[in-house]
Length: 282
Image (cartoon, rainbow, N blue to C red; front, side):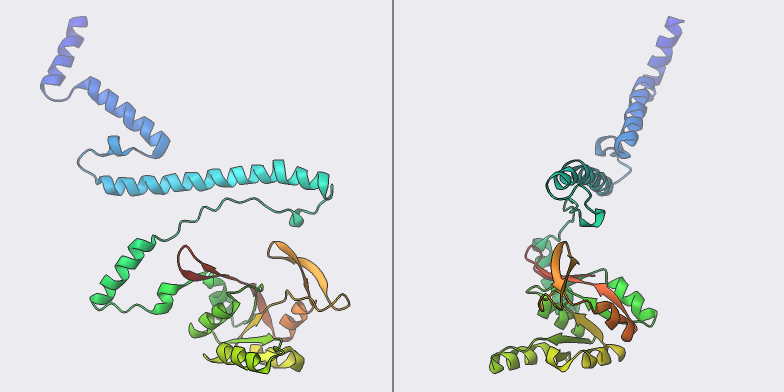
């Protein structure tokens, strides 16, 4: 029996089908599939592209990283942040008041590749708009869905230095905007700000004129650009949770939405210095 097995192995090796190597290869591929679908080493058999395999592995790696980050973040929130708040702040703290830990797993654009590609594309006649290069919408489908359903829209936006740019960008993208503002005590500065904000067709209404002009334009189909985080004194204001912090506001947004038959959609505008783009997260 030993001689027969020896002869079979020799015969396989002579014909190029070594059964031992085949078994080793099978084991390696089986282990690789269990771990990562396959590996570049075992998958690069000359029949498939190692570049394609590398892309697949990178996607699987990213999926595993995001999954691990979510589990670790949840553990940190539940085992570190929550006990700390229960001991130092309130033992019966409400779940919506707990700050949740989160890893930033977003992948940003490669600016060098992006910068090199744009001149080459425009050089061969490809038309690329400036807004496509400079602006980025995250969650635009929420606005598109509301429009498709025939609803008026009020954007709830926190104060930040990107609010003027984002309002202008939205208007130039075919989404007419209307908003309210507190006039500046310097008439010249007030005029300059108003002209800059309305230069692309947006409508600005002074708060002193009341809420009716603003709601009138929302009812006409223009998107309301509402910044509720302002303190108008203890008698009129209430403090509420707002974009991860605690801010004073007027308790009238719900009534405004009902009067104008609008849906309220939160939006967070910012300038991303790493990508060089204005980002509107909706």
